[in-house]
Image 1: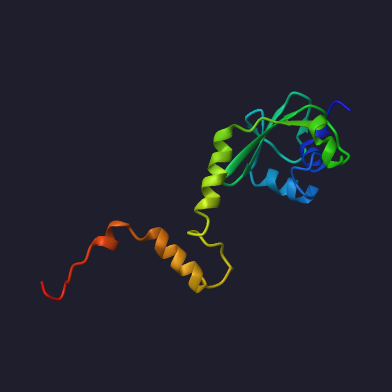
Image 2 (image 1 turned 90 degrees about the vertical axis):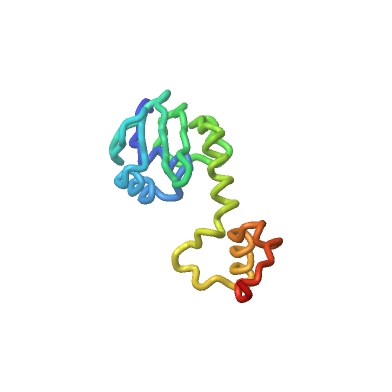
Length: 137
């Protein structure tokens, strides 16, 4: 097979869990093939470079083989090559480290531990040594 639909290929190569999610990502403008925005029906062929935006990271994959049937996790390396630049992974690490500052919507109120951690992170260090009595001024 020399060509395959992008939504089927991303599902078969295990980039997305379902083909529906892969198609939605295309419709939302998160998938690029060789720098051009891709629709779900766009065909991919070997040597194409696919960029997948999963905020905050943009992953890049090189198509080695065009497939439409899902392969086992051990065979993914024969289907695609991960060419994501290291800066993107650094960005992912930074977002994980600072992740507790931006709480996900719907997770409820922060616990007491979350609040203390947040205050520890946001309070400047010089305030600890600063002992000024505002009432006497």
